[in-house]
Length: 120
Image (cartoon, rainbow, N blue to C red; front, side, top):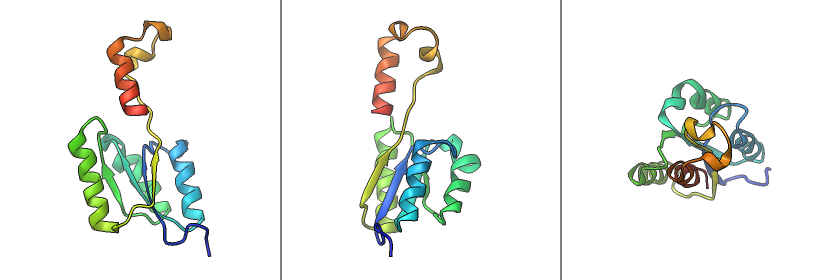
């Protein structure tokens, strides 16, 4: 019997098997939680879905977290599929490439706002 048996977790932000979110997903699963994933669409088929399969998870949904309608859709799909949500993991990080070049003080105000909106 696992500490998290019967609990249901949704993880936003797994990009690959080096992601913090992936490590969290493995730990949650090891303790008995059912785990689902949401990530940007570009990563789903090549990276996220194969990782989800390793944890016997069939909930993998695309989501651009800068789009409120997509966020709402993920939670609606989760509710229809799993009902309850016990654990939500925010493991997202993003900044535009041009804002990662050079010194932090050279980051544009808009670039900082985008990074904060997605990553915090």
